[in-house]
Image (tube, rainbow, N blue to C red; front, side):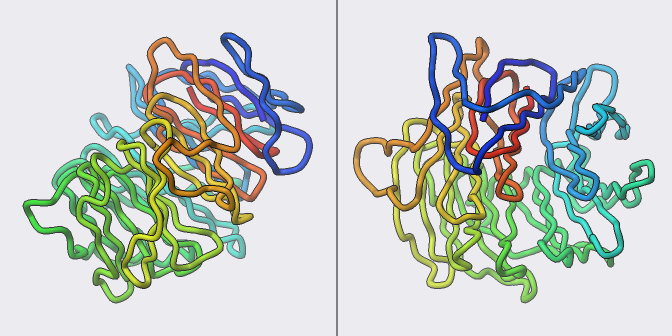
Length: 358
């Protein structure tokens, strides 16, 4: 894939070849990934906090907190155009989740906002994007949001450690059972299973992990203090419906069997983990780190041992101000999206289509 260093811009890179890991050549201050070129570049005025792909029209949705306004920026890679949807003053977007209904040619982005609201934005093609619903499900910041794969549920988490569930097209929120009050901490990530739409997982600032049966409104399993510190990396397997993988500030990758409520494996890596993504092919796991690196592991060769696991591929950022790579995810087997906080980074990836936000 490719690399670069940018601030306040979104760059879309496109690579030729198979959706596999290319060889990376590193130099003193930058790296090069073969067969990669910049397909588009979008300057962004402000600090980008989250992004997702709007797959029906192939736009990239970016949450931008700017000096003048907070907004969602819709970037069209085809004609390199930009469309903005402004958010109310004080409603910074902290997380995004996308859902589409191809048969109806409709799509939506859910936005978790700092004013406690979850806003639903209609992003359907051939029309201007607009906020169509606002739900004040939290009395504090809404820090995470996730729409189930089939679009049945919308879940959101807050800085108080609570998670609520509401029908995507329906009535008000229902709180899910949480940790004991003494163990509650701000929700860092939410993730639905792509194989079992009733399974929802959440991780928090204290390292707790919870998994619910969202249809039955009960815990499937929970693991107090699963990590030593915040857990922002959270992904279900795309091949095994019982496998959940987490990564935390403690530089540990942990594999969980959610059916039998037990830990399977624990692997140390070279630095804290701020994001995870499981490739739909079933073998590759991409990790963003707290120091701005991308680590790509082959799960067939990843084994637990005392020394840090050696990634199949590594690319380290050379940013003056550092900053964690807040999220990274494979999409459609040939795309990788990444969102960064707070600033610039250099990246490499393993697929034919890649986007990077700095």
